[in-house]
Amino acid sequence: MCIRDRAAFLKYQAQTTPHPLAMEISHAEGSYIYDTNNKAYLDFVAGVSACSLGHRHPKVLEAIHTQLEKYMHVMVYGEYIQKPALELTKLLAKYYPKNIEKTYLTNSGTEAIDGALKLARRYTGRSEILAADKAYHGNTMGALSVMGYEARKQPFRPLIPDVRFLKFNAVEDLKKISSKTAAVILETIQGGAGFVQPKDDYLNKVQKRCNEVGALLILDEIQPGIGRTGTLFGFENYNCNPDIVVVGKGLGGGMPIGAFSASAKMMDCLSEKPMLGHITTFGGHPVIAAAALATLKEITNSELMHSVLEKETFIRSKLKHPLITEIRGKGLMLCALTKQADVTNKIVMEAMEQGLILFWLLYEPKAIRITPPLTISMKELEKGCDIIIKVLDKIHNNC
Image (cartoon, rainbow, N blue to C red; front, side, top):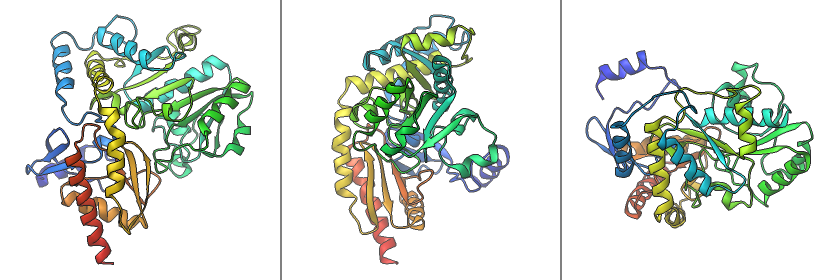
């Protein structure tokens, strides 16, 4: 990296941590990212689960180029009929459960979370929201309010009121869901907490309790959705049909997008009393929607989802080592847990030196994120796993 560029990066571009990785990118293709020294890095993170088809997938590029030749932004969301957004929402409706009929397109997953929370309050006429301990749904004020990690919320209080918490997978906490509850919002698989899956039919039990008291169930599919767990939506693995679904990340094929979806009756509440109940300028942007449509078509029309579980099995078989205590998650939403946080830090940094991109999770300091593109080949997976084992051996031998 050019020293001047690094200095400018730190001076002019706002940072999220005091010590960013600060690798300067030249280009990216397929499963690889290249720095300005033309060093290739095998990508086991996929932009934090966002680049579901890898980098610069030809069908996504073609869709973007085709749309660029027609028009870009022409009007705020929802006024004009724009074919990319229309076709994307139609295709999503095709694959959702029958009760999920309409989709509102946003610019990011966290924006979609805020929209879903507003929709739940508007539709039910109630204010209470229940979220999970160690939940992560984004960082806008609404999404931050349903974050289950107080240390990250405290500096920004007061947040939106009437938000309470339950423990994920704790059936005894379901009694907290009452006739005062507008919605329960859960990640289908808890991300920041360490890729914790629901167990013992938990999501179905939550849904039943919500139905008993007239509350809504919002499932955050921003990470597990769009094929990453071997099904198009993560909730398909867990015997559950939510009332509101939120997607993002992998839907865009590397472009910024989010969406929340619900029944027509529910979603129509946002168009009256008051009108313009939820508005956005750039949501449903035709170029972004075209990229997302191409991504969704490729994932649903190919063998990618079928191969995801095979790839999960391969990763689990390869990553066996005394320093790895557990591999959590499903499909290509995996994390390897080590015995100590400093071991995880060493692995992530040393792997980068060896040409492999790994990353951390928000709340679980011992976890190594493994969320490669769905398109990654078995040969590339083997190469990446071999680097991880090599790094683990080096650390283990120096202990």
